[in-house]
Amino acid sequence: MTVVQLQLEPSTHGVGPLGDGGVVAPATMTNKAQRAPAAESGTQGRHGILDCGWGRLLYAPSFESPKQLAQALLQEQPGRRDIALYVEDPQLVLAEAPSQLFLDPSLLFRRPLDAADVRVDRPAPGVVVRPLTTRADIAAINRLYAMRRMVPLDPAVVWAQRQSEALTYLVAEDERTGEVIGSVLGIDHVAAFDDPQGGTSLWCLAVDPQTRVSGAGESLTQYLVAHFARRGRAFLDLSVLHDNEHAIGLYQRLGFQKAAGFVIKHKNAINQRLFGDTEDVSGLNPYARLIVDEARRRGISAEVVDAPAGIFKLRHFGHEVLCRESLTELTGGVAMTWCQDKVLTLRRLASIGLRVPRQRTAGDAQADAAFMCECGSVVVKPALGEQGRGISVDVRTEPHLVEAIARAAKEGGHVVIEEFCAGQDLRIVVIGYKVVAAAIRRPAEIVGDGQSTVAKLIERQSARRAAATGGESRIPVDAETERCLAGQGLAMDSVLPPGQAVNVRKTANLHTGGTIHDVTAQLHPLLREAAETAARALRIPVVGLDFLVPSPDQPEYVVIEANERPGLANHEPQPTAQRFVDLLFPFTA
Image 1 (tube, rainbow, N blue to C red):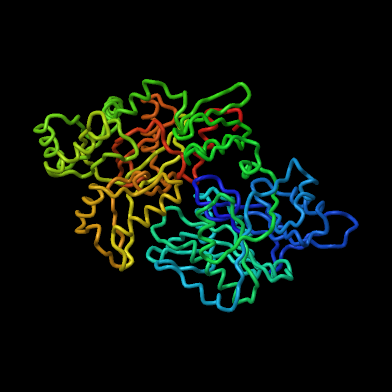
Image 2 (image 1 turned 90 degrees about the horizontal axis):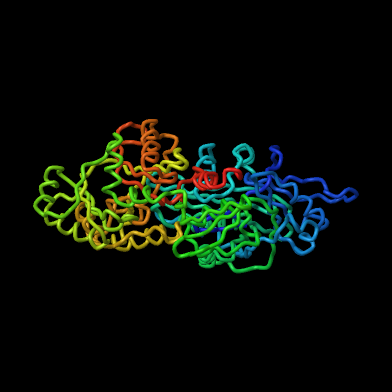
């Protein structure tokens, strides 16, 4: 079964941005599922229980009674995910423990398998699919799971059963870089449970939301189709959340059709949003939902005040906090003023000795041009802008300077001309005046296939980024994109050779299609100190600070911006939402 969830929200099943996990069974593994003694004394049957690494899969038809199945589900271990599959009478199982079990709100899909399916496992261009072979593969899968907020694999369990006939762990690689960009788990029900129907199932399909290569999810799914068809199995099943339209569309294109069947799980903090009697928060963006989900896991109630604006209220007993995503009432008016105006930001940070680029406010055309000549290259940006809108990078000529100033002015407010400083774009998130996460942000990039135009490649990559981020990340097709391409001798109608990678933007903002890559463990102590010093100087308890650095593990830097409402999503595996809720409700930590 698979639960594919391509939104930036905590998953509950095990596919795509999913994450299903269950209780980890004993580490002794065989090619068959663990056969647990009957839970109820006096019975003679055996139960089909398979440890998948993220938890246990319970094959419901092998249990003698609803009571025994319920008792097995109640043995779920903390931090794992157990799943009871093919439950025929879910109401009877739920009646055994109504306050602890719930009916999973997913749909079951099935693809019949036949002899022709043995030939469908041709991967998409640029994708290599292979079985898990090394411990590094397990770490790579857990990296994907962390990005998708899925329950991680237990490395010892997976390594012990990597050659099991019952479980097939697969990874998908970027053929050009060798990086693992996707994974999936296939379960052979005949090998695991002696299934008389000859079935199989697909679980935990996860694809890197920032990969430039298309087709990894489809390639992994088709590999399992062919793999189990070669074994002569009858069908491949999966389950997917009812509202996951992107995943459902993929599976239907691959020949899956809705089937009857029920899944039951144990209520826990990981899947609380699926069974809790709470207000609908589907209208919130991923940054707000991430915080609301973490709060609800702790028993903190959430009330949506203005969904389009990302405004919500958190309440726990008598303590109440109003939030707009990561911006709260803890941020004062002066701190807001310092952060919102980029001129004031750098002036304040320079006053306490932090390194910042030279800067001036645009206005006098002659002085503006002289400043550009003095710097050699400049960045032009709206002083009050956000999300990368209206920014022009590496401006070197007077005509481009005039154009860039006009473009930035359209965003409103005054325009800033800033010394261009080369380096990697580093975002450091500080919560409670302590660094919680650091990530390198990279500009939007496309990879040629030898056939598609640059315009088509941008369209496809933008669609993938939008799907992976709940619509938050898209690549603009505008004059700045065309200028970036022109600087590389390319145009929108150019066709790139297979495998050639090209940056299509010079800014690395997530909202303009950029990707973000965690470097918290590599962060140099001086950069950590500078970020925490900046937060204290601005008197802002939650802030995203933008640095330009030669490398995150070196001490050189300049600070270029401070964001008073940093997006806490996309910093996995760092606990940004947890530390944010800790700050607001420390007694729930």
